[in-house]
Amino acid sequence: MGEMRETYDVVVLGTGAAGLSAALTAAALGGSVGLFEKAPTVGGTTAVSGGVAWIPAHERPDVPSPPTVDEALTYLRSLSNGTMDDALVEVFVRQAAPTIEFLEAHSPVRFSVAEGFPDYKPEHPGARPQGGRSFNPQPFDFSELGEWAARVTAFPQDFSNVGFDAETRARMWGDADGPAPGSDVRVTGAALVGALLRGLLDLGVEPRTGHRGVDLLRHGAEVTGVVLETGDGRIEVGARRAVVIASGGFEWDPELVKAFLRGPMDGPVSPPYNTGDGLRMAMRAGAGLGSMGHAWWVPVVQMPGDTYEGHPRSRSVRLERTRPRSIMVNRYGRRFCNEAADYNSLGGAFHYFDGVRFEFPNLPAWLVIDHRHLETYGFLGFGAGDELPGWLHRSADLTELAQRTGIDAEGLAGTIAAWNANVAAGHDPDFRRGASAYDGYWGDRSQPTVAEQTLGPIDEPPFYAVRISSGCLGTKGGPRTDVHGQVLDVDGRPITGLYAAGNAMAGPTGIAYGGAGGTIGPALVFGHRAAVHALGAAVGAAR
Ligand SMILES: Cc1cc2nc3c(=O)[nH]c(=O)nc-3n(C[C@H](O)[C@H](O)[C@H](O)COP(=O)(O)OP(=O)(O)OC[C@H]3O[C@@H](n4cnc5c(N)ncnc54)[C@H](O)[C@@H]3O)c2cc1C
Image 1 (cartoon, rainbow, N blue to C red):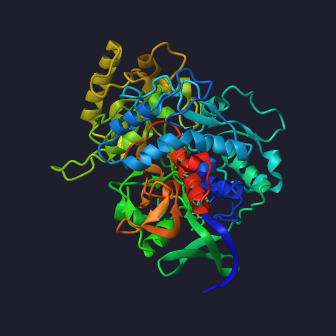
Image 2: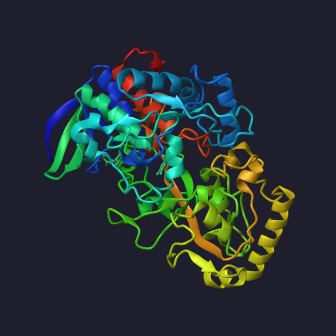
Image 3: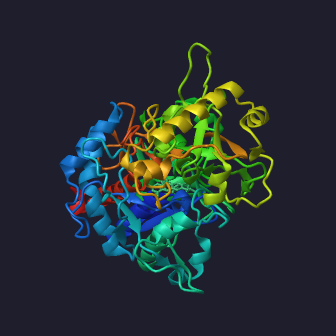
């Protein structure tokens, strides 16, 4: 074993939303903090994300009739289907707004409410079709980070930064002007990470990259530190009050994925460092587990040869399946979902299992568009005049498209005839696409009605198809915690000194994904609460 080189009040593993929130809180409350990150850069999935935080109840002055605690609880319960941890969800709902205030008070991070961003199930009781719960981090100037500006995780800024095309990025600027020429102002998750990191640096905490937590140090049943793998071998770091596991999910570990997830998951969209190290450490310490079958599901496209740091990349597909003149079909040529629904809900559609044929009929699926779609909106970075790669199948007619892809030709022809007739009638009786306030949000906003923003015939050849499968933004399962973020053992007793937050913890919301920011919101809250509890601090958010 390595030598004990240093000891802190609080040791945090991981520098995503959960880890930064925990570390910033601990430092702001006067604790000494060791912040360790496995990757060569900081920020994790959070840094490449939209950075939106879902704050279900608050009293921000810029929102007319701000959402209440009761409304939020009613809404989340309506999505739970028995999978939520009620106690944790209640704490999240009540403490989200105070947590945001705390982070704003102790760092340059600032949030503004994303105007008109509907909740993901806006017609459920307690939901907000008019938006008001999704908070954008305001743009942050990376020139304030000095040498750390180059040390924040980023995907290459190509055509679609995992779904962040030019239109999406423009919306993320909110009311702010776009970047001034030559400036280094960032939006989305980069802005969130950058601003929290600035706050930490100001409080004297420097993250240590290339430090991978691999094991916990224990004295009896109590956790007293961690073992870290570094470029210079293993070291031991002591923790007087807490080790906070904020090391993300296990989506990049195929064995854990196979062992736990409830259905196929072909490609994570996150950076490739979340391999369940925290889960393994917690299991060794006797943690009870929860939410292990669930993930933040997302439909993905995979392009041959598309890699990030040597790992195959998967890219989320959102605008392409929401805008008019685009549908998804399975290998039988049948539609199987409302393509414009929120990405997480589509996980269930992909995981439908046909017990007669004994197969997942909707995996893989195919996204089919016509030429007008390509001409009007572009598709996965390609325009109408571009040379198309082989994986984006192009055919003069539907029969040829079926031959190229292996989709059943008769099924495809029948589905598209029925779809075109329904679109002409202005509705989708099969899956009610265009009936929810959410369905138009990422559709063609130049159209006047939600239905027209997302419904359109597929009738102008040539036709195109791309293979779609089931991916995730991250997994949701991990060690169960109490309302303070303290890890519980298999008998439900707190393990002294051990906390978990973010995607590393047993996700409190079960299968639910309330609205944009539904993962970063709880990650910020439970990271914060872990630090508050560990230091025994009497701040408002500790209650
Ligand atoms: C393209 C995209 C867009 C998204 N948009 C949004 C959005 O707008 N709103 C939202 O709520 N969610 C969004 N998500 C999901 C969201 O980003 C994640 O669920 C969330 O950021 C997870 O935060 P976290 O802190 O738990 O984990 P992460 O941000 O993944 O951080 C975990 C960190 O731990 C590090 N780590 C792993 N193992 C170890 C170890 N052994 N020791 C030390 N460090 C370790 C990792 O390298 C990583 O830096 C998006 C995801 C993607 C991919």
